[in-house]
Image (tube, rainbow, N blue to C red):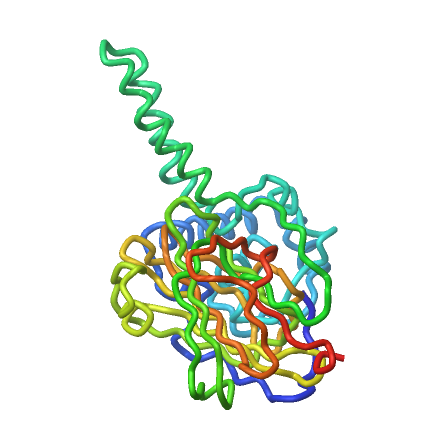
Length: 319
């Protein structure tokens, strides 16, 4: 990820209630933060050389982080609160990117996966050995839920790709959207518990504004969920002229109650770039300027984040 000085609109600061990349908290989140505190204590006392080396390789400022940032692992939940990073070659945890599992789900995998595996092992040596299949099936689903499959991102100019996997449940033309500044098209995607839940940027764009809105946890298929549920609102602006604006909304559901968004105001995203996820079933919305826009998908269609073309603008307005 790269950052640049604003070319069209001045980005707004991160709001105070956006306390981390997972502002809604959660049990697994709190456990992982506790693990991080213990880990930093251990590193400073028993691996001071590693801590010094990571400090020398670190780029940017840690100001704003809610805790010490000793290495890339410490950025997992506070990346949006500070301005530091490491080059990928200096990241000792980069091997995790090759696991086809998102690092945002590692805590859940550890805290739920090992007990499920232990339960299957115990049941396998009882008269009811066949019941071992139940925790194994749940474990397989858990791994599947946090999967992070590679995607081939289309490169043609003017395309807007899906920000999430799932089923298109809403295509509505809006008379006016405040951030867009005029007529807009809203496309809603429902993510079931079997979909990939990573979110991706619909276009090359710059982060202009971020909002975290606490709320209810209605079923994501309920139309009222779009207005009443906890959500993260992301205002983006195209990097290329005419600098159209767009909005991505991550909306929680009845089961999905943890939204992850690690974006920084002013950050430039590439098309299809991962920027967060919604854990355990949810809804994602994409709101676009309704000007020379051709919607390429239909209600009921299943789409894939970063791969499926949702809409396109006329080439004459993209160049």
